[in-house]
Image (tube, rainbow, N blue to C red; front, side, top):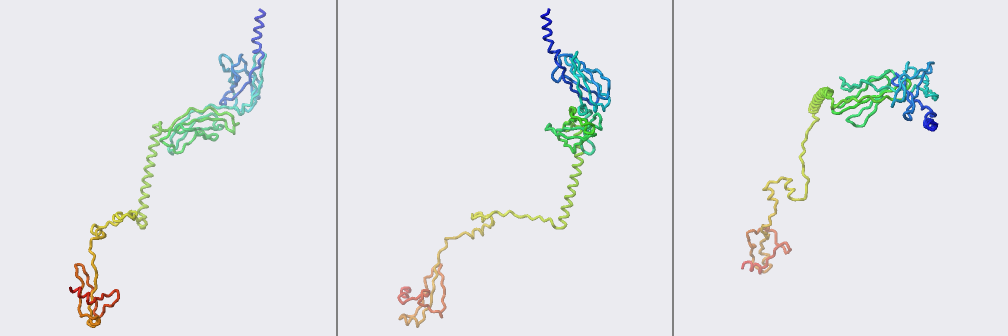
Amino acid sequence: MATRLLLLLFLTGPVISKEPPDVDCLVVNLQYVHCSWNKQGTPEVNYTFYSRFSNVKEVSECETYVLENSTNIGCNQPYGDQLNRFYIFYTKLVHGEKRSLQEHELKTKVKLNPPTNLTIKNESDSNLWVYWNQTATNCVESEIRIRTNNKKWEMSKISVGKQNYCINLPSSSSQYELQVRSKVGYNCGDSDFWSDWSHPVVWGSNNSTDINKMNGSMSVWTLVLCVVGAITLILMVMTLLHHERLRIILIPMVPKPSLIPHDIEDWFKLSKGLKESFKANYNERACPVREYCHVSQSDSESSGSSTFSFTTDQTDCSIFIPVDESDLCSSSTSAALVSSEEAEQVSV
């Protein structure tokens, strides 16, 4: 019996002697204070939780415990006045004779619920407007994230008090996915904790109603722009023609000259007859050119021969060049001197 008692004390001794865990507290949506003590795991015993704000003298026990495997791991305590978070919050965790007292600054430890009623509307200004609801409008700032066609998220901050966002001239062929989260702004304590993201809403290529509206508005604007553009173009052309500043000159394409004869002929486009006249004819017969002259009587006597005249052989192509009688044939290389012997040979 004594052995069993010692064994029981040995096993339960570390549990009994173990100090209570630390308590972490957070103001949830300015409605209640959530405190937990399971940061290092589920406790082995059930602790009793007590708390109060510094402006309240009475200590109250937890009204609603948070359980895990039938073990107390946290407490949801009523928050009371919204200004209570600016006071010190005292907590006490008790198990048997073990007690743990702590003080908490809750001013920056406020976590809001995610925004609700997130809706998207395609307004008459052709812009896409996003609306949502959140607690304590005057103290809340928000953040929106958008991604187009399932690409990377893009973040945008919304100033304190605003609960809407505008997407300018969205593309009807794209799909937009949006989420919003909020926190208490700088003018009301500037909380360190953002709310969780809201449920996503989608608008775009899969939204037939919005697409039809968008296509209808875009088609009207497209038609108007086309008509205005056509009228402007016509007026410009008429103005230029009136002032003779619009002249259309057709310049024929001139081929690049080359040294190839047939390219030149093709370039000038010569007629067949004219083209044949440029061809060289090497079949013509050569015609000798001869001169003749009359030998006077005085010249013939001085040369001791009788007076006569002669002509050269006359062929079909011979050309006779007459010489003036006043011009005597000289003995130079350009005149033809005919001796009597040569005359006899010619006559024979």
